Length: 304
View 1 (cartoon, rainbow, N blue to C red):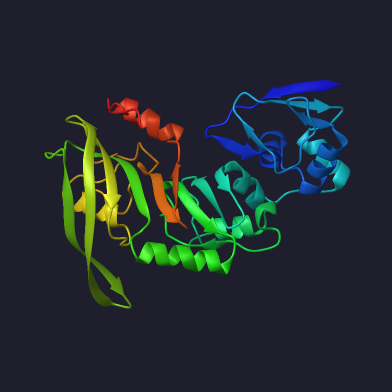
View 2 (cartoon, rainbow, N blue to C red; view 1 turned 30 degrees about the horizontal axis):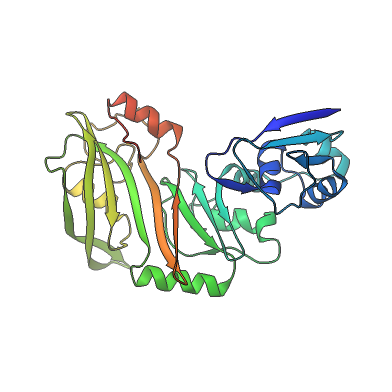
């Protein structure tokens, strides 16, 4: 029996073993390797290795291969944990020897905390991606914020990224839907943000460059490029000027949302940096709930 599947990716390329796990179930790497070697899975009618990249429009043929996830689990007595399944649901934008870039889902913490039952570091530590190493978190992204996120695969890479962030050589772009109509179409926010550490009051300088992409009397779609990296910087700055982000449960104005919207409308859209004179740029597609909310608020999304 032969079954043909067409590849449709939200980004440029993906390893074929990653594509198989994302589309056919959480199949062990050993089984994927075996079926590729035997030719029971072919790419564009050819045998390929697990590292081969697939792209939109490629055809993957399955020959006498039982790709039912339940049957595979029963045959191999392999039952993936919920954490591993969740890791596979997050879009892998890039996976190389030193780090992975993913489109983090809203509602998943980056690393463990007092209220975090599941987080990316623990999730990916159990995945095949980090089979011979462990994930290192190199920057922050709030639990309810979606979008581009990086996990290093070794300590050296983690330290390198930490240095890049400290020297402000990593450039991030966020998109947010906030309440009301901002008066200026572009500019800078320079703020003194207050936080407390063991009851000690700490004031930090925060700077963000912003541009309004679309707006009306109900809401504004804002592009933001933080220069500094303060905790909750963008959320605090919009709240302070009276235009809190929809779905923000911590920094919100009275009578905003009224409990209707459950998602934070803040998305880490793009990240740029340079390694050994090579430029890297990664973008993360907007979640469906973000696009639906744009339509609800009668906002148009420009073509990026």
